[in-house]
Image (cartoon, rainbow, N blue to C red; front, top):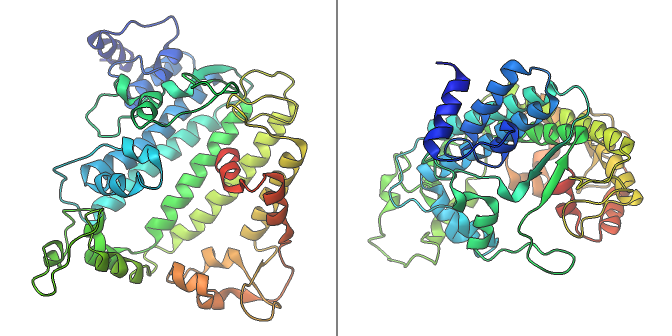
Length: 415
């Protein structure tokens, strides 16, 4: 049975009516049960007969990227992490309340978690591969709030799993210019957005390579139960109540002493050092795609619901603006990030007399045990200190000024 037949059977079984465009259906969750996996099958079937369809290739890359995110979410749900994160996260970030609760999580080992990360990375790589095949300009309209996420892995992405429905469920509102709730955000994706998404895929793969390069066994064994109620550990007694000096657990259902232990255990030996160089290569690829996306954005003369606008365009998102100064400082930041990753400039050291800097490239090519606490303190930087040309640190102040102290929000958006 061909893939196209499988997709059509799934579509018929769902009771949904196909439109004239399978790509539109796939992005709107109107194929089969609405899952990303079914959308991918449908788009690949279309590409089997239309190999050079750049619009379909972008849609495939987008849905593969969504599927990679789903893999992480579904793994977290399967093993119970989403339940803990939901309780804690909703106090800080309201949409975390939309994460599904799992009252009966499966047992999990550290290798199971590594497998989830590797699987998600494979989807990000597949997304990047599809996007790399985009050859010319294209136009693809989609409502981003209609995208569905099967967070609990039940094989169905229903109406209540649209981004809009999940935001409605927790009272999270997007406001338009007239302060009315936005019920749709139509975006006209184009060639520059393919590089934007490739940049994000490479950032995701870089994060995965960094995690898998290190060994988190000690943390998982001694404090993994904070996130994973059924973690496989030689210290199973940590999951039960204290018999001496009993203490009630806090509002998140976590013993505060376990949180202290978790913080103390944030030191990770190198397990697979070759992954660190792959991490650096993915970060460099992200900077290359950032330059390429701006080359495409700058060449645009239309103005149609832009995902990321050039200074002469309007963004699809309300109140989102990119002016000349923002564009210039962002490109400058990307260039300096690439220089750091190539070891052409040093990161100024935050301790000492200011004559030495950190060779960031060597962090990846000569990796040692990673401890975020010791990096903040400074002693972890000792093997990488050198004298030489330093990064121009005025870039951060310029970004804070241009982005009106919303730098991290813009970094998340601009990639």
